[in-house]
Length: 528
Image 1 (cartoon, rainbow, N blue to C red):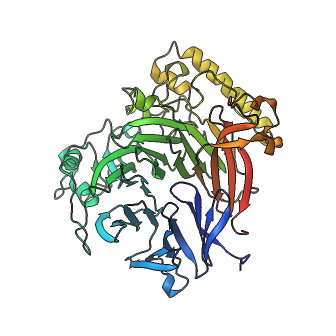
Image 2: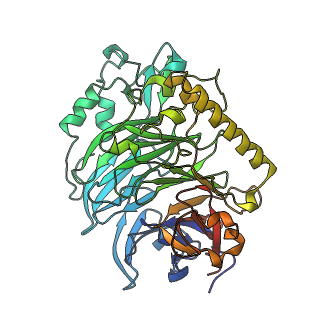
């Protein structure tokens, strides 16, 4: 029996974006996205975490503590097909996140990460981490690139030029470290296992990783630097990549200056996307090399990034935010096929102050590293630059406001100016003129200014019959947009969004034109 007083505690997609798991104050429910419908429910108490393993009957659930059997420290693995509990594991503190693929199960506590073999729930490794109250962690669904990503402990940089200090141009001498602590101790204590527990494999950091740490130009915040030194800068925007097959950390990626707010791994485990707490810049890195391969600007004003998701083919990246907008960026093919990453890809340009150019467009005092339309590169693919001839983006009539018309006109003028000036200025100047903005976007139809959170997922391309939606596809401009031989049939990409107020929104994206995503349907998860 559905109660109108139910409170949603948890919402998420499965690894493929085809199913939804929801934890409420009364139980948990599992939904199919297409066609939409609920196919499993349980009303045994309040649940705070409900994670699926792809579309299988295996679930990892954690209660909210409203009754003794539903402790937030207890993880239960259940089989929904057999209605049975496979195993239970109790942890020393509250479980903040659980992630799975077909080989590993990851449990995140505030300052620890547990790595399990999912086939027998044997503890393989324990990682001591910095405080991670946000529960930020990402696991690759792929077993070929079986990686775990999580925020690195803060670093303290000692610099006389505070505004320009970066990990690229500041070095610490051994004298900056406390008398009883080597420059590597902070990293070693953080990145290695705390020792075997309950059959855990005690495998310390790899030798190559130790050497990388020993030669690092910065030290950890745990290295006992003098806290009274006004030149100390805390840099907490790094991400650690951990190989879950070898149980070794592989590298530290310097993603942002500010604190990490969101991170995700692509479904094949080859790309890592990150966003800082300011939320204006999104960066994409190669998991294999740690190189920054794309950089995008979400917007000009700070916002909270709630989620990010790659498409299956790594051609699109979606980011949902507190502005109730989902931005979709087009990655292009040049980064990996040509290897044309700029030589200044990770240069000091990212960390220099840019007040004289654009104060509100600078994230954490960083100027965007992008190229002009005439000099596109793999390091920062321009989402507005289409392969082949350009087509006008899709415009949703329901979003045709005066403000959007003025903004679009301004952006077109800026692109023309950048194209003209790009031939005369060096790349570091033209990079400021032509920011790499979103390829498509959607605005959730949510009224009021409440803090509604959202998660987006990009699906596999589908054929859409435009005759079923005459109010959306009635314009004749759609007739030749895809070149499909079947009249009224268009190849579109589904973009699904779930919101914390309990709705599923089904949008479609034109993969060639971009622009506005069109809303096809919406469903209430609480009323199903």
